[in-house]
Image (tube, rainbow, N blue to C red; front, side, top):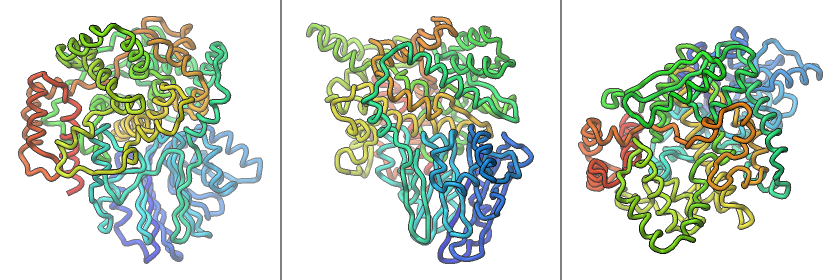
Amino acid sequence: MCGICGFVRFGGKIENGTAEKMLSPLAHRGPDDEGIFVDNDRAPFLLLGHRRLSVIDLEGGHQPLSDETGNFWCVHNGEIYNFPELKNELEGKGYVFRTHSDTEVIANMYRFCGSECVRKLNGMFAFCVWDKKERTLFLARDRIGIKPVYYYFDGDNFIFSSSIKSFLGIDFVKKEVDSEALSEYLQYLYINAPRSIFKSIRKLEPGSCIKLREKSLTVTRYWDAVEIIKSGNDNIVSNENECVEKIKSLLADSVKMRLISDVPLGVFLSGGVDSSIITSLAVKGSGKKVNTFSVTFKGKGYYDESRFARKVSRLFETEHREIEIEPDLGSELGEIISLLDEPFADSSFVPAFYLSKFTRRFVKVALSGTGGDDIFAGYRRYAVGNAIKMLERSPGFIKKALPAVANNIFPTRKNRMGEKAILARRLFAAMEKDEERRHGEIMSFITRDMQRELLLVMPEAPEGTRDTVLSAYRLFDDGYSYVNRALYADFISYLGGDLLVKEDQATMAVALEGRVPFLDHRLAEYSFRIDPRLKLRGFTTKYILKKAFEDALPRDILYREKHGFAFPISEYLRGDFSDVAEDILLSRKNVFFNNEAIKDMLNSHREGKSDFGQHLWALLVFNLWHDKYAK
């Protein structure tokens, strides 16, 4: 796991000091080693940079690294889990290797089959290969988007990096905020590829690659979830026993591959379904005692799920450690914001960071359960269609009474009733929308209507062109269920734009490699073919996944009520931190937001009339991030 960057210049040699400007912001991603390769033989001129976190082939994995001919140079961030098999295949064809590194396998695979090499790789990756002879650059990102890639191209200069901060020291790269990206950030708390917060900088989309030859840049999609889902719709798997056996086999193999490491590793264990399954398979696959780690919140009651994590740990006899946190946001907010590549307002990043920091004291690699909800329908929102049908069949007085009851319950994630009130309010708001817009409504925080009051300049775009969730939903016709449509929308937006960003940013901030077994592309592809009625049965989420592991985990772990990996930001913003937030948000001449609208939001939240915790956190994060990196 590393940080990579590169610069191709057509108009002249790359200036001295450029490598340091680009690599310095990547130091936390790879504290073990630094490498630079410069090709100044002839135009276009090239710089490749690499910061390394040593996990595989500790002695021989220095990058940038070339094949035996010295013609194909590669920098790579991530892990290729099937590299031993690929290496054997290439050696059988006469290729010679000097290291045990998966990066050398990538260089030789590209030499062997060019851009088709990405289809052979199983792993999480962002890599670049430079062909010295042909003067071409190839840049690729893994199928699901586990590893980040930002890039800039103006016809004369092409720049890429694992972090948007690598661009900040390049004078000619403009730092103008993209108003459409800002609007999407406010609505969903994150920014989806291909947008970034800056107009001039793009994200390479998951399952995509770039070919740069002369002054021509081509972006190609080599793996597309929607096409796989559509092609599998004619071959839906509905046999429960078949699904159970296939899921168990694929996931066990995925975990086994991700246990390969030359350094100590562990598992993030929350006590939820997904992390408990990964723990059970890690123990079985490793054949030795496994390290597990969890986080709890001091004095936050409902957020403490540590008893479930401890139960799973005892069951599988892991070496379990937990950290209890009570962040002082007033003093620690600056450090937290400085870790972000761009504005990102999922507040669960806070505990994810502290858990990663704690875990890094003991291991260098950690497996997580990220992705299980996203391919097996684990979120309660997927049951919204069933809930709405049930409500529509209810007597009229119940339809009127339930929203009134929800509106009279104090909205808070501090207790079960308050959290149910939040969910109910979202459900009733979604009912007012047609089916196409329901999922986007449920996922939204600062909606477009709210933004009209909040933003000083409201971006206007044709309907559907800016809304990633709505656009994804519209890719399917009426032959697809609400569950499959919503799953796909989340797969390319919430998973890629939020969960995987959080995982990468929180772990790499402390030089910890995070691995996500549920997101092996083979398992994801198989899940796309499973009958949605096996994923969501009535109001039972992840039905088929839970069924597959009934022999490994107790029912009170598999079937307990779901609670997300949340941070009690709403409570912080009703306590002492509220004054800090008000000072940050209102003690300035705001160029983006209407201060009067912010003041109304703050007052309503403090008084308990509404739960605007995530909304206010999004505004705080943006203002502080913009002050630090974009002014």
